[in-house]
Length: 149
Image 1 (cartoon, helix red, strand yellow):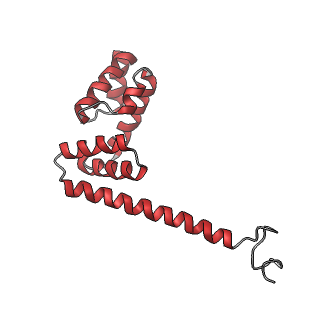
Image 2: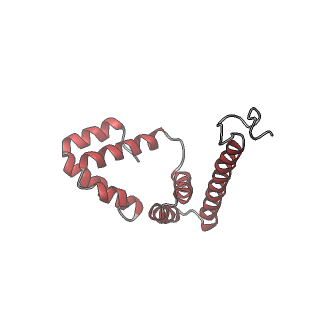
Image 3: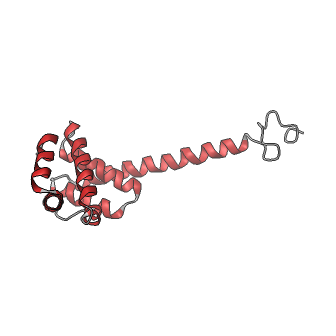
């Protein structure tokens, strides 16, 4: 259970930032079975690690999603962003929560489908925009005397 913001702030102030950062790393390792890479990278910057954790926890506190759903979303986003380290961590975390491989695969396939749709939507819009502008006079092809000859 994630503590309230007041409880988190009080604990940080009581421990000091270095001890609070160590506790955050231990808690992350307990949760994920490892310390996420970005947390390890931030360990020498306790203020950044603490504020990142406070931000993460505030999002989780305000969510009505269960831990399994959060992990499936994390798997999907990691897959769509092509972050292999994040993807491996969240696949393991989802598995540790008892989420079946077929559900994890479904999240990955949905992410791939959306990423593909995003590529196609962006590229076809650019193609359409390029066709609608004359590159000689840089006005609409409908108004361009050069392209409409």
